[in-house]
Amino acid sequence: MQEEVIRVQGLRVRYPAAARDAVTGIDFAVAAGEVFGLLGIGVGFELPAYFPKLTARENLAAFAALYRRPADRPEQVLATVGLAGAADQRAATLSKGMKMRLNLARAILHRPDVLFLDEPTSGLDPANAAEVRAVIRAQADAGRTVFLTTHDMPAVEELCTRVAFMRDGAIVAIDTPRNLRLAYGRRSVIAEFAEAGQLRHAEFPATDDPGLLALLATGRVQTVHTREAALADVFIAVTNRTPAGATP
Image (cartoon, rainbow, N blue to C red; front, side, top):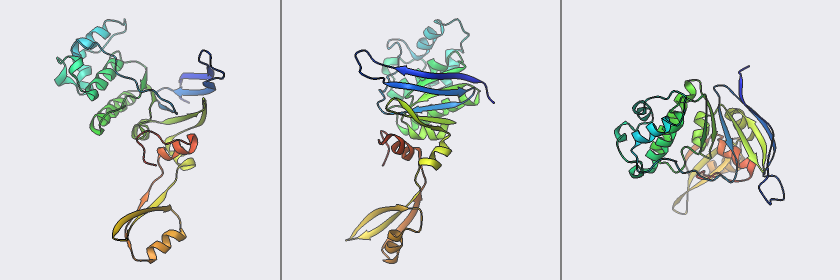
């Protein structure tokens, strides 16, 4: 069994003047080298933290000086996150995606054994989000443990070895993405068909559904394709909510 690097037992959180706990006594453990995802309702997106008047290179040099632990050279880390060409650009002038990557560069600067990331792809376009996911994957491949809080389902699907879902302050499901999809996900068939001069869509269970068979018998079906179970389905099933950006 892999060594545990994080163990949480009986964690409770109650805000001042609150009548009940916001977190109601959760337990979980994270193993070395694991990418662990924590998902739930009510996340507040975090903005990158940096010195706006300093360049990207100067920002990393400043953060490197704050710790006694050896740090990689700023140029090396900027190259890792795809910011080598913006090394001498002031942080305030960087795009949202570049600022998020600078924030990630700061996090990996000292080669931490455990990396905590809160919504690292929040608000990013698909290209920038893919670049951030690639950096996180490289950290995991290097043997680092990653604790990820996010509602970015593609990131969870691609990166996480295990996922925990929270609802009402409690963990209601925890397992590998595959096992969660099998337990809570839904596989379906989507048919595109002509009706009143327009193309329409209908979704059916991935079985010998009478409604689908009846529609096929009309001869009006243009295309048919399967929809595999996804973690967005799991999120909806266990929290009764739709994740931001997901299609119900």
